[in-house]
Image (tube, rainbow, N blue to C red; front, side, top):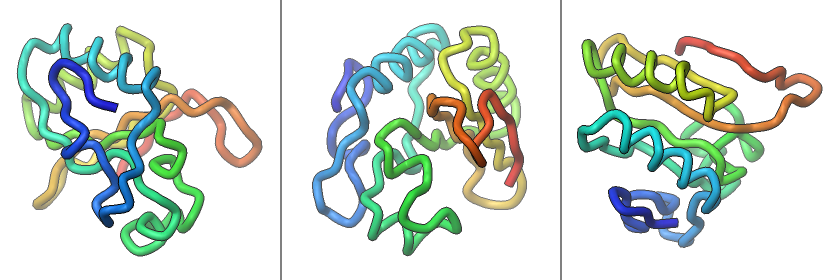
Length: 125
């Protein structure tokens, strides 16, 4: 779901199926972007179950398959600033941090608390 600063092309599932993130979730991502004040590159957003199974250890049911998760390509000081802001704003219930090697990003989602998937939570890759 496109917003002021994010296009459907960058948010859609990379397999070409056309799946897009949840509109309410993207409103929260846009609020974060507004407060951050800088552009944000999307590494991954919506993923259909088939594509997610190919690219993620979470298989066919990972957070991205709900349309309520996004990976933003940020590193170093920018990653720290965005992480702090995301925590302060309390819009997201899941935050994953990948800040080693190539392909550094922050994962954000707003999934509900569920058995085997406690929320809020923070993890590193």
